[in-house]
Amino acid sequence: MKHLAKRITQTSPKSFGMFQKASMSGREDLIHLEVGRPSADTPQHIKDATIQAIQDGHVHYSDLRGLPHVREALAEKLKAKNDLDVGADRVIVTNGLTHGSYAAIMAFLDDGDEAILLEPYYPQHIGKIELAGAVPVLAQLDAADDFRIDPAAIEGKITERSKMIVLINPCNPTGRVYSREELQALADLAIKHDLIVVSDEVYEDILFDKAEHISIASLPGMDERTITLFAFTKSYAMDGWRLGYMVAPEAAIGALLKITANDVTHVNTFIQEGALAAVKGDPSVLQGLIDEDAEKRQRVVSRLNQMPGITCTWPQGTIYAFPDVSGTGLNSQDFADRLLDETGVVVEAGSFYGETGEGHVRVCFGSVSLEDIDEAMNRLQSFVGTLSTVEA
Ligand SMILES: Cc1ncc(COP(=O)(O)O)c(C=O)c1O
Image 1 (spheres, rainbow, N blue to C red):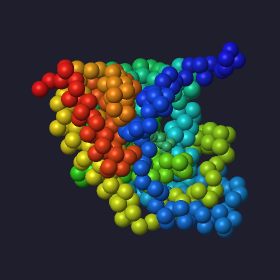
Image 2: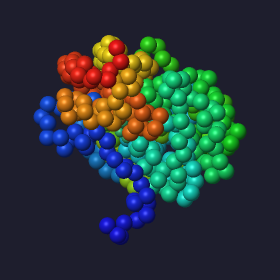
Image 3: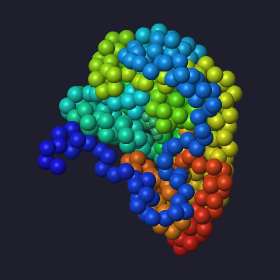
Image 4: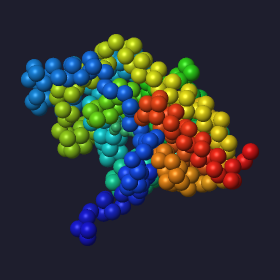
């Protein structure tokens, strides 16, 4: 449409990936391993607290930054869990992580500014950078190095227009949980080149094999240049609630509020009581949800590694496996397309996350039941068996 604003025509998504293809396939036996949607129900105590808040009449406008007692509880959590000693005034409750990343990107990026993303990247962040009129610049991480943070690859992309580095930790799609040394290397670059870091930590709780999640803002000198984004989405199976929060330097709060107050005013008042119930609730409920993910990961990764032409490193966090399927002789898009056409199993092509994702597919194990995982792995195994190009 010719009237559309440039910010729309210049903005991704250029493709919605396999979800759209699967929806148009007409198949009724689809198993969706492409969408990062938790399969569990939201814990009952969170629902109860929210319903109670409605019954109690918490249905009106409230504080633009989020309910003060909820932000106080979030600040306590940030101190105890993330080593971020911030007051409640530095917390803004958001509509999911997506709203926080939008606000951070819009508040800091001008036309022509550059934001560096680690590739493989999360496509949604690209779209927001483009909406701001800024330029996404990709620092490619190496699959052969298990997609570790590579300071030289990042520094090589820094120019005088660079303003921001976007980090996802634990990482979607690779499942990496970055070590203190990796984060320190990235922090050193941010400080040296005076860059803002936007740190997406939506998977902070979903950790396996004693992996430790470190918030980059807790490293020396990073608190004043990092916007850290969290959400209840994945950990508490609350994707439809649209509930998250961000922590920002004091000097940035006013700027961020200019975005959040203008686009949504504030997050639904009663839903925030659900956030309070989540952070204050019995931690064993959260652990129970993570244990389910751990079992699914075990099932998926061990099965994938038995298939000819496929190797899969064990994700340290998130709800994704990112197997290398190059040994099947198919590129990642052909693999995903043929798997859908021939078996009804939907995975995302690694190339969807940038060139360095080529040779891989992303398999979301957190979005389906154990039974569906077994069925999907059986179909995948038969599919791989039909490929004449598979290496022995
Ligand atoms: C890395 C990452 N960030 C953000 C989101 C979106 O989070 P929310 O639904 O809380 O906006 C997702 C969802 O898949 C994600 O994987």
